Length: 219
Image 1 (cartoon, rainbow, N blue to C red):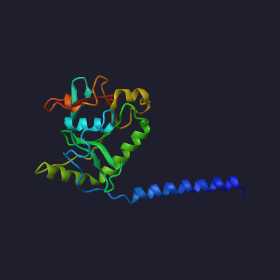
Image 2 (tube, one colour):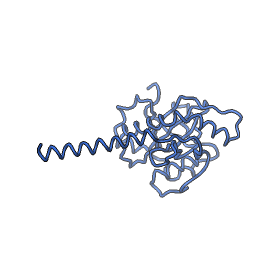
Image 3 (tube, helix red, strand yellow):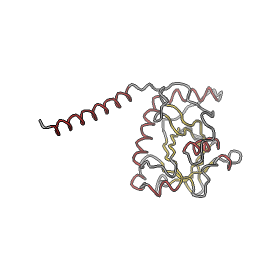
Image 4 (cartoon, rainbow, N blue to C red):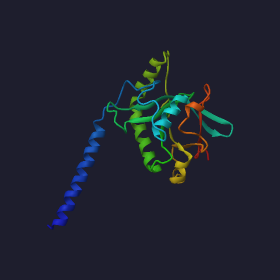
């Protein structure tokens, strides 16, 4: 067997072993059943201007998102957590950027991107779908944590998980999104005139932050 073929086989074996390691890592990942960091601030409160974390924290401190689904109709999403851990291993990739729920108690997974983010839409869709698969088995625990933290007698989330990609409008000018408009994920944006580094400061009372939808349901 020639050296070049042997090298190729060795490289292929190494790649395969790495993939197996990643799969095993996913399989043995332990789902989280407590300490979801609900209704609290944690980490750096005011990250540097321009960072995704600054947009995330600003939205969270604003309290809610107003999802503009039609000209005169919005759906309010109460934001309950940011960087919400889904597994006992809290490394990046096991945390939801923003988690919330609406008046019907539908849960929302919200994945944030900055205007300069390089992630293509298919990558982000795959990421959110993975978060959904991780969230489903622990929804009972999330419900329990919300009920206890808000001192509610009863609280029940639906199993109709909603998924959102949220980014400044200029993110979508750099990434092709039209082929994915029929996915079960809303592609949402903050208007170009929105100061994404000072979102909380611009909100009064329970106003929340309005976000707009490219692929509105039914269109």
